[in-house]
Image (tube, rainbow, N blue to C red):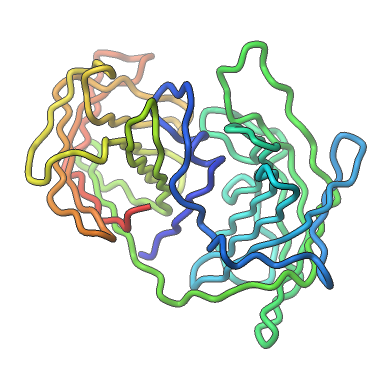
Length: 306
C-alpha cells in the first residue's frame, strides 16, 4: 500500500511524542523553490471577521494525494491542505488535514488534532483539476483546533469559512517512494491506512517521528534520536531523559494514549542517505484497565527519511 508523506510543521506539533519547549522542522513537503505568486489565481479564506489572502502558493499532485499551501508574508504564515485522493470530489476534514499556522508560530489550528474531538472538522471540495495546464481549484471550510492541547489557559478554536483556491499551479511527482509499516496488536495485524512522519529538533537533539494510523484512527507512534547506532537493539526505561526512543499505542479511536511498559525495544537495521529501516516491540495498557496488557509485536518500518 502506498503511504502519504506529510511533513507539515503543524503536523509535527500535533503528533510529537516529546514535551517540546522549542522545536524546528527539517523539511517542508513542498519544494520551497517552487513558489507561485498569486497573479491569475486565488487562495483566500474568512476568519475572525476578515478575509485572509495568500500572496503566493505551492501545490503538488502525486499518485495518491494532493498537497496545497497558501503563504502570506515573510514569517511563514500559511494555510496547508492535505488530501488522501487525487480526483474531483469532497473530502472530510476528519480524515484529511486542513491547518492554519499563524506568523512565526510553532503551533497552529487544525481540522484534526490527535486526542481532541472536533465538532466541525469541515471539508475540502476539489471542484476542478486542469491536467493540461496543471491548475487546481476548490473550496474548504473547517473549525481549527489549537495544536497545543496542553495550553493554559486553553486556546479557543477558530472557524475558517468561505475558503477558496482557484487556478492554483501544481507540480506532479510520479516518483513516490513507497513507505511500509507492519505490526501486530495482540496477535492481530495493525492495518495502517496512512503514515505521518516528521523530522524535528528538540532541545538540540535531532530526531524522527513516525505515526501509523488505521481506519479507526488508532495509532502507533514512534520517536527516535537520529544518532541511534545501526544494528544495536535499544531497550527503554520509561525515563524520557535517558531513553533515546519512545513508542506509544493510542487506542479507542486514537484518543487514549496507552501506558507503555519498560523494556520496549527498537533496532535500526539499515540507514542510507534516503531511507531508514527498523523493528520494534513493546507492551502497554489502557489507563482505565492497567492490568490488561496489550502486546505490540513484529513491528517493522521502512520509510523515506523525512
